[in-house]
Image (tube, rainbow, N blue to C red):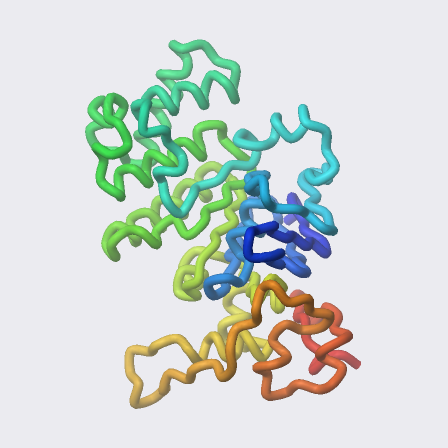
Amino acid sequence: MSILLSVHNLAIDYYTLNGIIHAVRRAELELCNGETLCIVGESGSGKSTLGAAIALALPLNAIVKSGSIIYNGIDLLKANRNTVERIRGREITMVFQDPLATFSPLHTIGEVLEDIAISKLGVTKREAKKIISEVLKKVRMPDVDRVLKSYPHELSGGMLQRAAIAAAILTKPRVIVADEPTSMLDVTIQAQILSLLEDIVRSDGASLVMITHHLGVAQRICEKTVVMYAGVVVEEGSTVDLVNTPLHPYTKSLLKAIPRESHKKARVVHIPGDPLDPRLEVLGCPFATRCPHTSNRCFNDVEYIEIGNRRVYCNIYAR
């Protein structure tokens, strides 16, 4: 598969009243045409910021310090305004963790979807209604007519998330970024939404970037997984390989910390030490203070090491 989108040496800071937050420090990843990729990490790892950067949806207090996001040969961070507006929300779309972020409380679901269709696709109102009807059927939305007339607060969480997914696929995007789209739903609805996303990506041939803290989600729907810790992508590879033979010490610790069906066979092992303060500058590996294999070099000089089709940010594998 050919590479559709690649991120190189990306660093993003947030300017806040409590100081500068180094949300993304060194991010590297590649997404191929039609590929499903998961960005996995604990809270504060920078995964949502990386996803928002790819979707061109960073908040105003976010500053890109360095790096590039190359999409279809275009550096999105250097592209002119017209190019960005053409791509954002049309070729690259986003499903937010809270579906209410997609909709205005003052407008019905139908009005919002109609506005997206007209503004992004340049269709007539009549054409927009036809497109919306087809998309809502695609996301298996029950009682379409009622949903179109409803305001966001009148829908259940599952129905609202289906509507948010409809908004994201309405323009037939090439890349869909889904930021923990099931975290606010109960277990039964979570499974339905994941199944829906799988079907959509398969039928439309779109590439999916799924952001999650749950490796189980990655195992279910993603061919490739990127693991983040304290703003750094520490490992990237096929999901199967990464889960079966993790390379980075953090990935290994993360897998050991997952509860198993039987604790008699595999006891949950907590990661020692404290998470890195996001306000601190870090030259080397951010996991160095918690890693059992740390050397002095790890605090100052670390590079990405290519191992077959995998990439790991760790001196253990440096020659």
